[in-house]
Length: 69
Image (cartoon, rainbow, N blue to C red; front, side):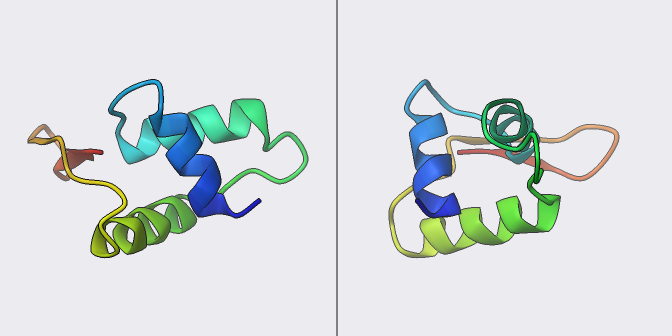
């Protein structure tokens, strides 16, 4: 199963930020090989470009903006 399919499956429970997706992936599947943040964000960008996900909201905070997919 690809990372994209796995992230889409994690989004079934509701909207999440990239950080939340990484954490959920690592807790469920990444015990031996955790996912890198760059993999999450590049995969989410590709899914967004292909119309498989959409941005549900953007939150501004003390750091970079957080997109919720």
